Length: 256
Image 1 (tube, rainbow, N blue to C red):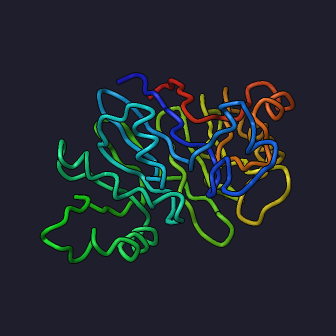
Image 2 (cartoon, rainbow, N blue to C red; image 1 turned 45 degrees about the vertical axis):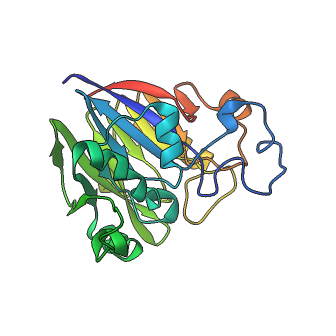
């Protein structure tokens, strides 16, 4: 394996864009890149597909982007916009059997509480996702792809980003600790949370993420977890070279 394809299944914030009940100019935009489902990516390599997070929009995302299989799921944290699509793994179980899930110990505990019908008793007359929940606390090898968790701070909550080959995906953060920054320097591709321009206690802003790009010096950076405060085309025009907002459906190839 020399290359993998990263596809942005969703690039929106927890409420998605358009946001229910909102009449702002971004929610009414005709630009399809301003239509953002909840944040997730798919990593495709050697006929395998690994997801980062299972959003509430997973079924729609999978149909839209032709998702044929899921060989593993990496969880960043246990907020609703990142986990509530877990039940949509069932069709892949019918073809593949159990799907391994990787999460921190804390996130794994929340998953067990949130999905008692998956991890506890279930009616014999109903189906449930067949999964193997595993704690991740260091690098793992998934079908030849080395995955390294990257701890970041999401307000008061620890969240995991993931590094794979010459790329990394870091969503939902307010602070990246120094030790994690050292894992992210000089990559070919770096994906960062950039919620909006105004400060938020749990998320990075556009200004902060641009500063991180200038510090970490990736060849290309994309911003994700984007709120309806940011219009795609307008925001891209003011970003420096090598930095862009991602959009649902964007695919990029990186060295694995």
